[in-house]
Image 1 (cartoon, rainbow, N blue to C red):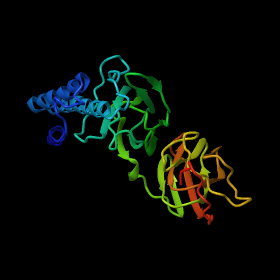
Image 2: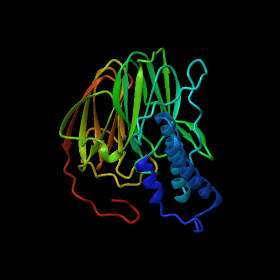
Image 3: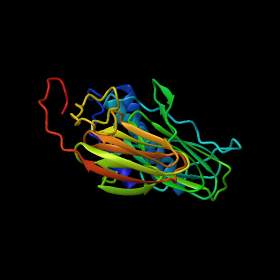
Image 4: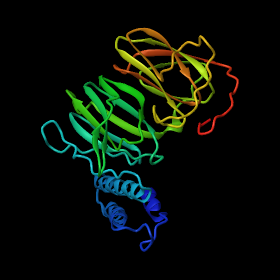
Length: 307
């Protein structure tokens, strides 16, 4: 509550300023009123509910002031029986938790507004767990990717594209012992890719080097994929970063991802620094990555191309 109050008080915002549109003023007042409700709350759940509403107002306020799409309210959480299913608050800004059967649509509070992020997911207990990204703004409603669909326990990190505004969590065939949590982190929190790296399930890694060959080895019974995301954070064809002049006969092809079904080994070219998104359908397959730098002499820069 103290942290939220300090953030509202620190807003560089003038009620009669040029950016004080009616919509912006509405969000600002909503944040102030949420803080007042939280301060006057008699129970922790009531205080956390008020703070969630205030945080949502701050997210909308920041989007309006910076010209980004404005998220709208998520659909109410609902249990399988149709009764409301409240989220369980922890008091941590970027963390949401829940339990039992039902659907919960969580507004994404990004540490770096407008930029892609990571979501770290933990699931304990028995049951089915599904995570899906949603884009729900004033001008657009779309269903995004479904990065997690598992039975039983799970721990992993997934890549959140910049346009996703909500996380839709669905749990089925579970009891109150089936608990989940999501934590949104900046991309800088991704572990740095090293020359030899082992892991399990879903992960996002940060490649800090230059051109390199990545050898991917997977042991699993399901579908898997390793995808490269350029440091510019734009996917093809939006990425206009200049490709390296790979030597002849360099393995790996020209794509930005490799994939397989079951045990497999593939080679992926890493053109520059960026991020690796490792996905595996069951969330539990094991993988082994090895990275070998490739020495490519710099070529003359052509006008209009990025480095």
